[in-house]
Amino acid sequence: MHNIEVVQQMIDWIEKNMEEGPTLQKVSGAVGYSPWYCSCMFHDITGMTMKSYVVGRRLAMITEEIRDTKERILDIAIKYGFSSQEALTRVFKEQYGCTPAAYRRKNKPVPMTVHKHVLFPNYDEKRIKTMEETRLAVRVEHIPAHKYLGIWEEAASNYCEFWNYHDCDEVCGFVTSMDKMAHSIVTAHTAGWKMKDDKMVYFYGTGVPTDYAGEIPKGFEIREVPASDYLVFSYPVFDYMSENADVMEAVEKLAFSYDPAEMGYEWNDEECQIYQRHYPEKLGYQVVRPVRKIK
Image (cartoon, rainbow, N blue to C red; front, side, top):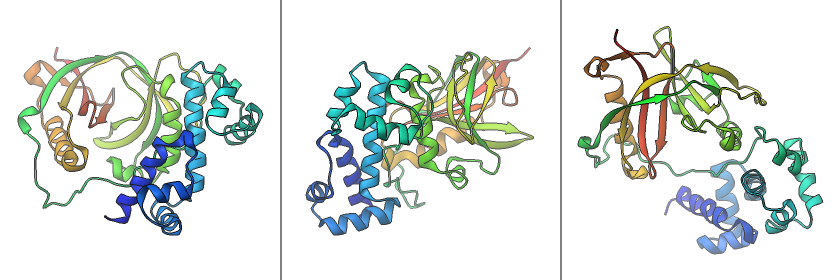
């Protein structure tokens, strides 16, 4: 087993056992390597210590429970190993600049530590193609007017290039914290492209309702997006590790070569944005491209 696979096992074990208080000793026992070796592997591959990751993820899970449930803050604090509500409040305020109670009353974007993923699909050109192109589909969807809170990176034209210019953990942390404030259709972590002077500019963030007037994290901006019809190019649920590259390539090829006149439309890329929905195990992959009726 490669070191990356072992570290992903460690991360996933931590995620499932956070309430029990993950320690280096417990994690090393779960994956079958010495504590010293696990500590070195974790730091080498993630760039952070296991302790700092556990501390960050614990606070993120607490933040989500404060945001998403009505459970008493004291009970949440005790559940995750704090000695008192006051102890949690000190850590919470130091990290996020507000108390847990204030955050519950009025959610705001905060830099949550997200669940790390270090194991990714193989994009080797020699990979065996298993996806079925007959499962590709096209349909029409209407998305009402909304705002989009995110980062538009003019130097990037795709997901991988985007992260050459931005801190993935920091950006995703803010976006994850916006989950309950996100738009019901253009949800948190919806990314995509904006056409600018015939150039595709990649963006990442979240849709928010038109009446959103909350905080805007540093480096983010907010833009209004008018209502529009969209053509949704899709492929249903698939195996992320073995099929991701082929599925994304096939869907994007269809989306950017399709003639919308076949359905009585023309592209509306200049006025609106092209969205990606990438949830392999739940939804599949979709490219959502704006159109307007041909007059």
